[in-house]
Length: 468
Image (tube, rainbow, N blue to C red; front, side):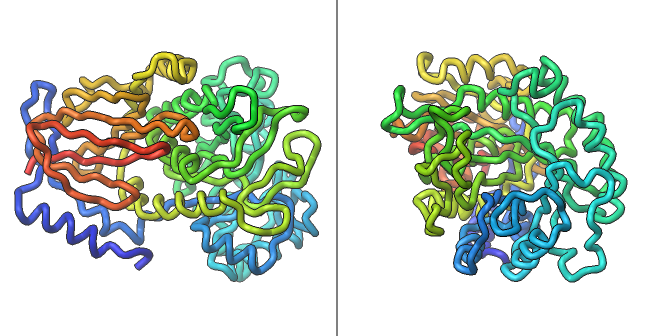
């Protein structure tokens, strides 16, 4: 088995054997509709495996660095450059093929990289020994509306050669300007992307809606210190809204694992993430229904005079050694590997933001408040009649195949502030709760329908309340 599920199976078997377990699903009249049972998600431990990608900066990897990659918990590599470390764009070039073979050697999946240059004739590896290693292609990055038709024109050829594999493109985030998008309205941009490109993917091919937001701003020596990008939640909400409209979509978010930007460069200064930073990104992102992630980047990109300078590093530094961020990503991936059997069993319903500190992250919560398609009220919860937090928090709502309600609870304070959040839940006739903390489920008794938890900086949990 991919991971041990003996403890999880025993946990749920014990809780269900002692009581007749039922979800707290029901009407808002506070009566409990007892019909569904808890699900042992651990039975899907080998089936529900989250795809965790990484972008590789344009540097070649030694065998030691390949092993580091394998050990990090990343299972898919986007082959975004080869040929002696220099950028290339053609999927099918000899350098990319060499890297696909290294992925095969280390038991990783590979995503080929084209940057949109293989317009109608994608290299066919179907009769080779590396075909099964290829998970798909990363065809283009942050396209404008004017490029959508050209991208869609590749689909017939790609789908014929790579049936069931991924046609990955990273679209712009909600912070992009009209001159980049080709339209002044971000929702129009997303709708056009779905209608022109994603809807054309044939049955059996995953429809991945991917974007990138690198939200961890500043560093301790920077003016204003560290903070979280105030457009991050809005971007997640836009993409979540697309998921609600088109449930077949797989949401993918590229997340920050490098420092970059800042004066005199062209983008805002991003700090090198800590473990709390990485887990913060993961829990907030999955609370919006995302089930795939990628880390940008694995190796440190070379200095380019625009975004990256000699002081910036990623998971692997310029000397080929592991940085603090390597271990932060590794710990986060390990937690997601425990959680994915749960996350990939759920349907996302929306989010309930708690803006407890009105002068903290004011713009972020203001932007999010306008995303009404994805926002929930307590009245939308069947298991919870009241919820509060002493600090800012994000609550995600999900259901499983049996109708059980599952909630994510996330401390939404920039982890550098070292702020804990205590979240209080008042339930509807629930006396038990399963709490996934650090990926491990534990059953707790609920006294008088009330329960609380204090979340550390960057921490999130998933909870399943029920009546025993």
